[in-house]
Length: 315
Image (cartoon, rainbow, N blue to C red):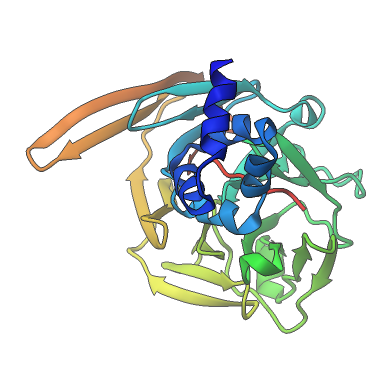
């Protein structure tokens, strides 16, 4: 009854004030409010409002393993755990590889097996809406494919990039580049585009474009979904074999690069720690998760991203 009265009082507000209140609300709250009132449903489903809300949303941390999706707010330290979607259960285990506007691009863990060429290898996933869209494979299936995810403009819809990342293909100049249009569910080849470097497959999407670390150059390689071309973005410090390198997004529109030397040994622990730092020094430290790993693992025990829950629907 209290919830019904609360919804009724909100619906009596003028549209501009209601939109401002909803813009400040968390996406999870809006999902719960959506079915309570036709006016709420209309506003929350409006694509202009969806992107306006996303652009004003605070970032969280999302971490996944084989069974659980965990989202943590670094400010309130609240956590929510939900099961991995049924679509990603065996035999369809996936690894999230990058995200754009709260939509996560995932790849099957056995994607390198090409004995079933017509089986979808990648999927788009919205963890908040719990929606999954499998992408039909292209005609040029390669076990060494690298993928990107972005857009020319949000109004024109999202696109997926695919190209071969094998040394042989790079040296022979045979790195076929393809783009998948989510709006019309089709692949097309970019005949005028070539890739002359091998990249670190852990790319990052920033403002609709893609960026990777080039392995045979000390540089960052970018791809524009507007011009549909690659370009060297900037030079980086020299990379050394065995080092760990991570390219990430910083303040929504910038790139950050972290590099560290790997230690030897077969047993190691992974930690997720949030540091809150103010002018006087370290204010707070929160450990979000700890895993101890034995031996060599080809797939991470979990995957972590800085992430904002999104109301963006899947096409």
